[in-house]
Image (cartoon, rainbow, N blue to C red; front, side, top):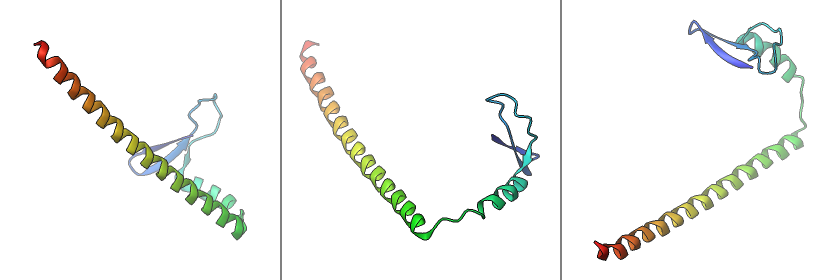
Length: 97
């Protein structure tokens, strides 16, 4: 499914046809919201489940940030090492000129 803005006013959703023609017509965003809203409001998650999910997302976000910080530190270290190697190579080759 993909969204397409028409007449710079309304957003319509339609099948991309990736898995073959589905036969469904385009649907305006407002209508889709109404249809899905009716289904979603029937879903109730117990508070303890919601807390568990929220905690899991926070832990995952913290883990991702920690991993990103480690990758950044390693990248900085490798960049420094490569810069030093380049400078040493230039210095050792300067006498050949």
